Length: 234
Image 1 (cartoon, rainbow, N blue to C red):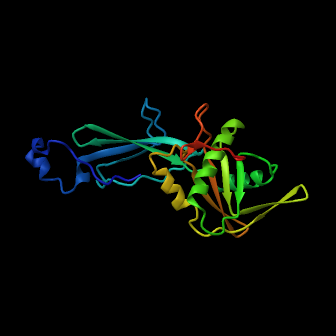
Image 2: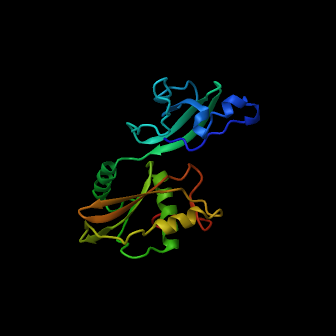
Image 3: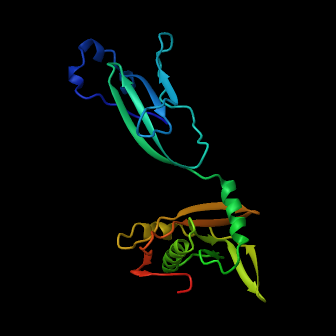
């Protein structure tokens, strides 16, 4: 966390002798602190920087912070100026899931029966059609809801083939950036009711694999693409 600017209102009310000593915006700050997991109640100081008589320079960048668990967190930054006034700013962040989790999830999904409705594997070596991506997101979101799953999964870079009733899965290698542009495109379409998938790129056995984690449709409100709800068999 870093402070980039700080403004005190009504600077014309600041005594002349104080204003004369202020050379930059940070000179107005006495100390500042960070609550890395603010719960909208008591401020829990997780890091603090302040001036001392011996050291007048104020650090403007905090120490790095690592969350023990992935998920969404609210950071609250509290700044106390040289007049004792308290200014706070909240920031919502999301701690990423470790890569090892997604590698484990990939192998778990690859071990599922091939008829699993809420998982789809695609080789996707070249560009993937925008409409196809929208249809898959709609279908997998709805199937995840119907099957009581926390998410549907679309996976690029894995070839799923069937032989004599059995299945075998091998890794391929989709081109760099595939899926991202299409995903951003439909996320910006106000007329399309689609979930917001998260994209996770992995290197597995020196091959690039892309996982789309697709939130399930809300109960009773199917996810649609171009006005129509879809399922994996539709």
